[in-house]
Length: 146
Image 1 (cartoon, rainbow, N blue to C red):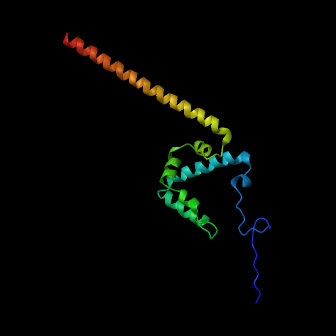
Image 2 (image 1 turned 120 degrees about the vertical axis):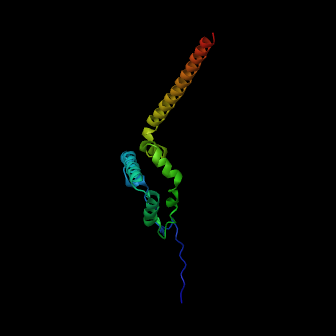
Image 3 (image 1 turned 90 degrees about the horizontal axis):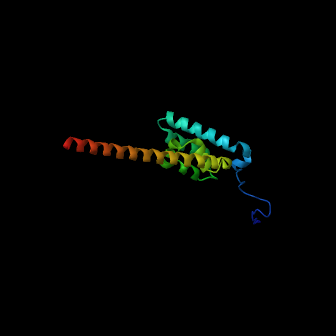
């Protein structure tokens, strides 16, 4: 009986498991952002209409990723935190955060800064109104006492 020993390496041109193409290799870069936003919108729609959305997502993920070559770690990313983020955040913000829309990052940052300023101004306005009401109440009480 003859036994052969072969080392499989990248150098000798033999790969046992081919690398999966990245999303950037499958979808042209010009379309990645729009694709991401469309996917997130669809997931948000499903999340709002499916009572057992989390379980459905996990089941679908394991069905497509739980192969002998993949331990399904991507499926572990479906958790309460990720689902809450999906529920709360805008699709474009999620895609920018995930580096799918690098040209939109500035736009999102500016929008967030504007919203923060608006919140600060609203809070400031409410404090001023409360202070004004308190001052008026004090004046009213003083005039009643006199």
